[in-house]
View 1 (cartoon, rainbow, N blue to C red):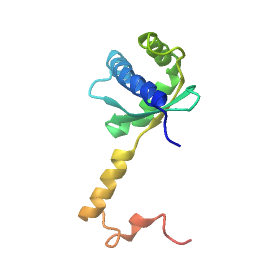
View 2: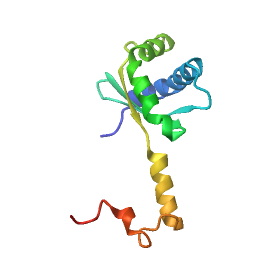
View 3: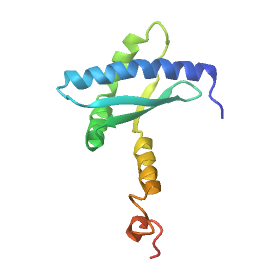
Amino acid sequence: MEETQRQKKIASVLQRDLVDVLQRAATDGGLKGILISVTKVKVTVDLSVAKVYLSIFPNNKAKELLEGIKANTTSVRHELAQRTKNQLRRMPSLEFFIDDSLEYIDNIERSLKGLDNPIDNPDLLDKRKKS
């Protein structure tokens, strides 16, 4: 189903402000050299839930940072509500997910270049192995 203009508008407002909130929280928390990017925000039809997809660099810290963000969702939501109080009547609840599309694209690119050729190394196809 196609997103409405209202959903798109709310998603873009949330995405823009979430980047500032999360990046500032990371630097204030003493995390240096970490880049948090909000790749996509999808808002439900009833505008009550926003699914936020994050890309975190470096990848090895993504899981623990996502857990920290999920633990502090209420404070992030409050900060976001303060920033958008003139644009939104109600702040949707936030759900955070890791966006691993860049890693997926990198794996495909490496396979196409022959770095991870499944023909030369059949162990790369463990999902297709018959039991």
